[in-house]
Amino acid sequence: MTTVLAIDQGTSGTKAVVVDGDGGVLGIAELPVRPTYLPGGGVEQNPRELLDSVLDAGREAVARAGARIDAVTLANQGETVLAWDPVTGDPLSPAIVWQDRRSEGICAELDGFRDRIADTTGLVLDPYFSAPKMAWLRRNVTGAGVVTTSDSWLVHHLTGEFVTDVSTASRSLVTRLGDVEWDAELLELFQLGEERLPRIVSCDEVVGGTSAFGGHVPVAGLVVDQQAALLAENCLRAGEAKCTFGTGAFLLANTGTSATRSTAGLAASVAWRVRGETSYCFDGQVYTAASAVRWLQDLGFVQSAADLDAVAATDAEGVLCVPALAGLAAPWWRPDAKAAFTGMTLSTGPRHLVLAVLQGIAAQVAEVGELVAADLGQPLTMLRVDGGLTRSRVLMQAVADLMQIRIDVYPSQHATPLGAVALARASLDPSLSLEDAVDAWEPSTTYEPRWSADQAADFRSRWGEAVAAAVTREGER
Image (cartoon, rainbow, N blue to C red; front, side, top):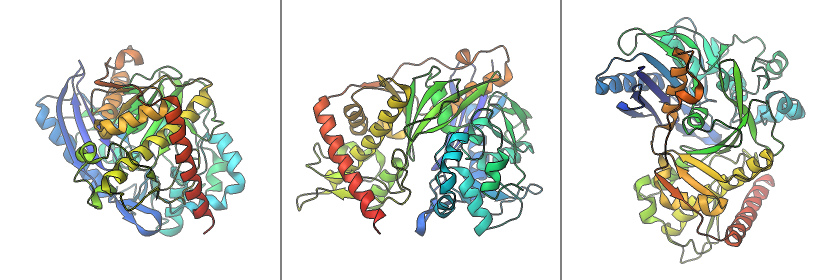
């Protein structure tokens, strides 16, 4: 039975979980990593803090487990990038986080190639993805070393290898969606044609070994965090979908083994490649979820996310929030969008604003869900959810009300590491099918819509008008 140390290196923290062969969690350690938010849309992290958090959390989890581990696996942020020295491993720049908007100008320069990029990569030309940020680093910070996503740097420190996995590579804007290889013409468009790029590996590949956590064990099962959660929640068939409520909210739907492009403005990317077969997904993003809650904390409206349900009003009394604190993704793709509240009066208090923010997050998820349904050609009948904000009954009920579908809450707070564990198991045991590698589960809580379809439609119409007004105002500046 394989015992795996799974490390989920995220935007707001690093979680390490030791899982035994029966799916039992033997040890957990979590360390915060707080991004720095800069004027002009900049979001950065200290690379050494990221690495230290991986090493320290991993070692602490292993110590708490009191068991020998057989493998290490890593789930990563997906689109966060940095420059680093491939000889010494030293960082040469800050880590530029996926939320960073400073490469908007580079995307604007390439607007004439938008259709070409979308057709090749399945993605929308936007600063969210990694290549614009890589190009921005080269123009504004350093031309030295290599520039990659954060997973390549972390894996290099663990193993000495220079790799990235197919799901991460597919989020770059410079890989072909069909065969998931670097595309020379797109690299030239982003002025990255001369870059040394990591080898792209499958998600069931042993990429090297590490002694960082005691004993020398294989490193395997590399994957993007959101795709890992999709796998953990058993979304193995086309049309099955999940939404992770973390720093942002990310709704992914499995689209099967065909490299299908979205016609509704969603990102189409690789879910995973296992046993030589590539599975794909549609991906819709809400850039601020837990980060919007943190903003409420900073304003003093709530002490922590655990206070949301106690503080939120039972009725927002007409107050609407467009929580575009880091721009808007699908279907608007407006990195310049700003957050807005409407409908406030002298009777409006913090309780109404807290509820409006939660309903605004839910409304964005509902918009993404509608796009997914349009692309799939069938409505979603159920959504599986995970992440820290699923503890908020107010938020989850708002999602059920606005989407008008059942919401099943994943019973563990460790969906991402558990998905990576499944890939590590598949890497170490070639006889194991992906279905057998994933643990079965039952929802801890289920939410059914309480609003009528007319209530949901009315709210979404009014909220959509608020978004349109906010986007129009920003565009006129």
